[in-house]
Image (cartoon, rainbow, N blue to C red; front, top):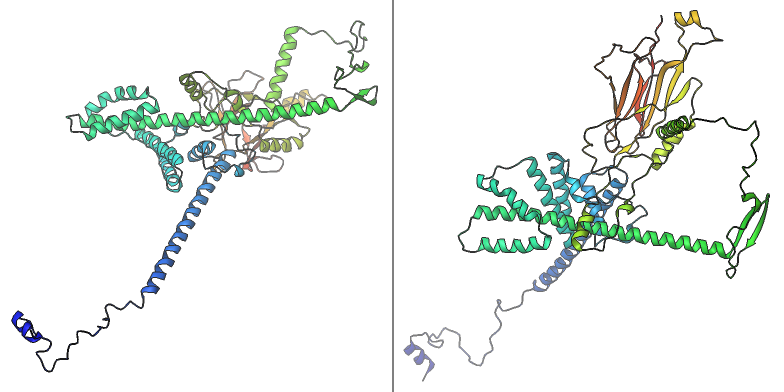
Length: 552
């Protein structure tokens, strides 16, 4: 059938029906339309997308490296601030984590890395007010944003939970009456469980809350919130235990190294020649390993002088009563301690890091009880010693004497910062100025050949605070008069002078210190011969004053 007729029957227009229409050739190959042609910009767009992906990946790596650098520097700064005694709460938390940090670079550690005390993380939050806790929460959030290690993230999340709990204690939120009545029972129940038991209980509570059982939603929701808090506390105990165990391993390693060095040195001494002094001459004694010879051969100079012969009359000492002798020794020792020459028993973390291979429960209790010691020690740091030696080198004038009239201070409670910083007593080198008062009475009864007794004319206090936390806040002092006596009043018997306490207050990490002085009116004149000075510069508090001269 003709194609045109077939199209007409089917109701379609034929290509050949119209004479004017172009003829249709079935063998003709159709050209590609414009839509089927490949885009000219396809290749360039693909290259652009590849370059953009490379740039995005490079930017991501740079941001990651920058975050790691900032995190590393933040931890290092915390380490430095703790070492210098000006640490904040966040610094102690960072140092605690640094001991057990899996991402820690041991090449960055220095010699003083492990000289810090083993601080219980729970004690860091104590005695912080709401503003300090808010600042600590903000600092913890900064670490959470930078930290990538999973273990470290859990550590900081735990710290944030504890911090929020302390803030809630300061600003309590009113809860329902029913919840408040069972809160203590809930804490009692959860406080006795271990971390693993709390994890299992958390899963059961979440399953119960997701179920369709008829339950008290408020009670179980409160139970879950309390469980998360106690879970954080249990995690904190495990962290502290890990810190103590790490510190103990380090101490043991140091002890072994020291013992090995001593052993090597002793073996070298036994194998080599030992110089022996004999009557002013030096001889080399060879010690053989095969022969058991004494390390130091006999020499006559080592024999003590015989006491069987009576001493010369000129050198014989007078007999002293035992009680008088003991009292003299005690007084001399107290004087030396007050002057700061005696070595105090400085806290050592090694004594507290004792191994315990008993049951796990007993080990946890022992390790948890190892908190940072807050026993008072004198300040014998290198900086303090340098300041003290420099002041001692200046000596004393003819009219001065060393003043050590320190008085004990009785305090009811320890300072609020005692758990964060180890309290220390500041060192000092004080002078008291002595002289004659040539009043009318003394002029009548005494002369220059037979002078009157010397009296106190002034004091020069030099107290050293090089490691003060708040360096911008200068130490202060106050005068304390006992028994209700006020300024200008006198309770002293005739011929004696009233005394008072001058108490110096500095703040952490230094304890207050007090001295008993003569209570007379000060001369605040700035004249050179009077020499009044009250200043705090470069860690030294100087208070120099003289009393007003009274002409009678």
